[in-house]
Every structure is written in structure tokens, then in C-alpha cells.
Image (cartoon, helix red, strand yellow):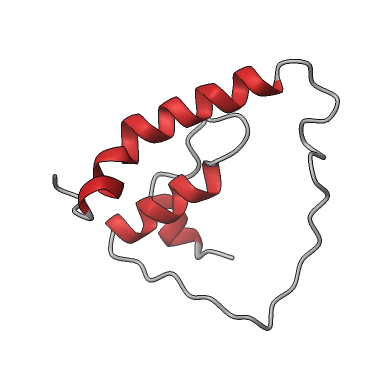
Length: 85
């Protein structure tokens, strides 16, 4: 869950990322904009592995593209721990 105001401030989901890493990118953007990320071990969910991609033939290409976009936007932060680096 994310507050609408936080979601808007963080720039929403990156529409260039079609599958994979979009939630990670949103989380990093939320942190960059000063929002806190909270974790609760009490929440549960069901994840059907590959449900979004199992019928696609271009999943590997999409995943590689998502990884390139993620690296270009967040790789420097992950290397330095500094959003301004």
C-alpha cells in the first residue's frame, strides 16, 4: 500500500518498465522523496509465479530492458548509498 500523495510525488510507476523491478523503482523513488518504507511480517499475500509473463514469448527481452532501465536510474545510488551521487 502507498499513499496517493506519496505515489504521485514519487512519480508513479515508470511506464518504460513493463515487467519486473517497477515496485523496486517506486520504493527507491519514495525514499528519495523522503517517504518512509514500513514492513510488517503480519501481512501476507499470494504470488503466482510468472502470472504476468507466462504467456509472453518476449519475457527475457522485457526483463533485460527493465534491468537496464533500473541500472541507469538507480545503479549509482545502489553503489554509493547517496541519492545525489
